[in-house]
Amino acid sequence: MATEIQIIKNKITMTALKELACERFGDLVKAVVDVEAGVMAIGGEMHSDEEEVLLSAGSKQENLWGVNLYPDKCEDDFVEFDSVINIRPRQNNRSRGVEDIAIREKIKMIVSNLVD
Image 1: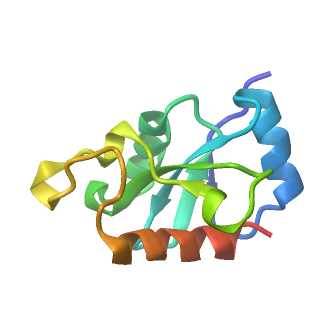
Image 2: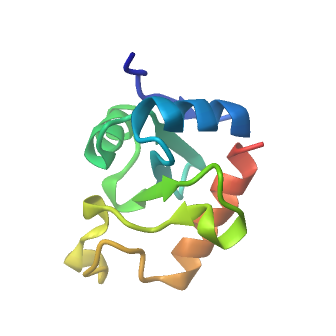
Image 3: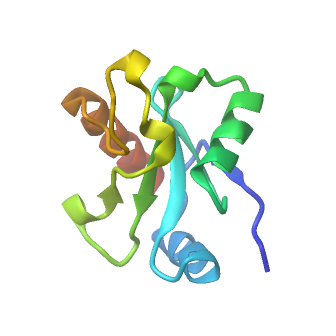
């Protein structure tokens, strides 16, 4: 059963995240984090689908970064910075990762605040 993409503004439990991972990819949940609004979208098949939902909700593309969340992993391994939507030479990010350390830290903080 496919889950609809949801924008997480308040806490989501780790249990709910694990259930979503099992439903979609087995061990991971794709997420797009809005580093300006402090929210994330989850539940999509692709990061670009979640990005589209956030853009429709008023987010700006330059604030959106794709990550993978691994509910069964801890700390540094929980968030993986890997998404095609992150390739944006105009923002000096030329890889699928997030090259700016400050943005990576902000993403980690937002995810930490939203996942309980």
